[in-house]
Length: 346
Image (cartoon, rainbow, N blue to C red):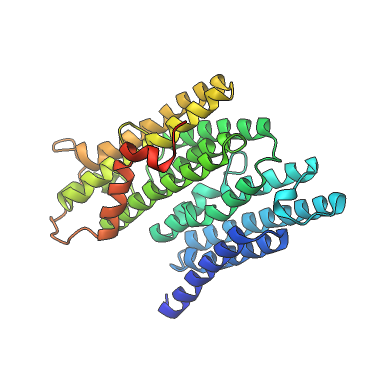
């Protein structure tokens, strides 16, 4: 892709995100989301592969539908209450439509079908944008309207997302699809707590973005897209593979790594809100995710001859690990000891 075109699309992405997260008016938020959608489409389809074109088409249709629902929700609220302010969403029908629209934008169950397909068709760097940056504006809208949304509906959607994200990821061999289902499961954790402690949802999103960025950039560096190719990369970059191993375990939420922090705080908050059954169910469902993270980690690092596949071994490269990956991996694994500074524990 032409560097000037890539620069324009990247600036448009940043502009769309900035407009949405800083707006008070529904029309401005909608405009920002539309700019975002239109800016990411060329980045998804830049390889001109039929699968990439299909992914871009699916993404456009789903996001356009979600944006229409969001606009319809805000107009319904304005019709009944005369308010266009994002935080003044009070009409129950508007709240229900908005929940559906943002669930569709994010890929929450039952509107999750598009996300694994789109991520599978996109390049790894664009996949990283889809899994992190593109989810920030909808999460912000969730954050601003969290006091008006139905907690029971959100809890049901969250538990279903955690269940389906874990269950559907078990049988995958494509790494991008595994990461897509991992994203759906993590969104379940973010959604279950948003009615009770919205700041905790944002903290979970930031930490998830850190870990996902580290994984996507590491996979992009070693050029691995399938589990079979991941098994042979330990000969190529042993140190990067060790870092990837730790980041995967952190994404699974194992202590004493950073990924354990949001899960711990969410379970604590749910218990305070007398929702111990929901906390128990979502904790047990995270074990499904743990299985495929461990499988990824096993393929990355622990596999040694004669258990490797019949692929040709790759040459060891002395290319230094990119400083961004090193910083992201360090943050993804070592933030738990300073958790009181990140989120004061009451």
